[in-house]
Figure (cartoon, rainbow, N blue to C red):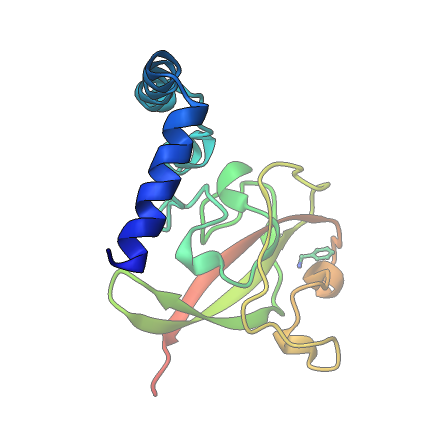
Length: 172
Ligand code: ABN
């Protein structure tokens, strides 16, 4: 007899000596029941639920911080304060000095030069604060920094909210 056959036969015999047919059937049954119950175990599906229910950023909503034109804005959105994305609310004046940024518009895949003017002459609006800093430069490049109260040049220096005005298409 081949040694492998002999080894197999002896292990089968010792197994048969140690286990009764009834206990073999019982453990087989336990295994089958366990396998059948496996799909009923609780599974953490919150990640999938969260990604399905998560709101997509609205890049075309002027009242959303995700609006593409706001890529470097820092302040209260005038569109939530009685004005629009590009015009100051009644009773406020746009700052003549501004900071300038470049935003990518995913709608036409072009880059636009955007002026971020502050609207001045009323206390802070307090609604829809938005702070995005794409391509923003440190303070030593003042005209490329958004963390500045640009109402400083206005006669009424109170900061109210910020608008974004398209100046043109950025050429490559
Ligand atoms: N340009 C918005 C702003 C206003 C006041 C202080 C910081 C930033």
